[in-house]
Length: 204
Image (cartoon, rainbow, N blue to C red; front, top):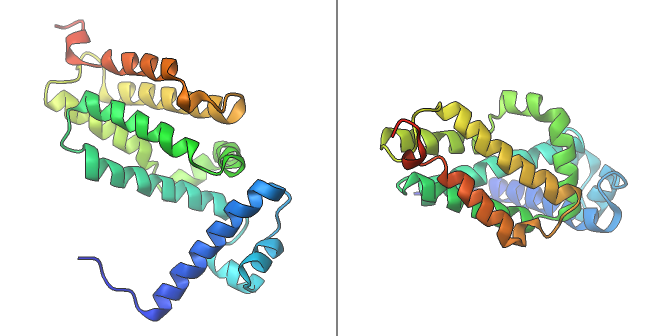
């Protein structure tokens, strides 16, 4: 049962969501780099001191996106994929990732991916990359159940899947905003996922 929040916690959450919403709105109109902390505070009607109570810098807003993305996909795995056939789980994971990516505020998502390259090591040191963890868990479960090939390590196959995932993301934010809608891309990725099946293993 979810714990009931007190008034202080409700207000804290409301202010946090207001900051996030203001950033989404302003990035579309002025861009992330041009947007200042003072601008955000004016939009939310809070003091600069209040902002720093939630975020230590503007880049922390992007780390917040990283953490929330991790939590989103971990929850999606636990609620939808954990008991599913692992190859089907990987296919559904990709479909959901496509949908998730295409519904983000594009300019903010693009900036997030740019900063993530530089900050990934620091971010993942305190907040492990749960998306990579989910992919690895699915593949390990598939090997355990005999549905995913075992002539390659789970780690190598998970990294391959992650490379495909990140390649898609880079394509999307760099030059092809239609990538999430292109069925040809989806079909090829599904073929790559199918190649991880136990029936594709050389040992069969």
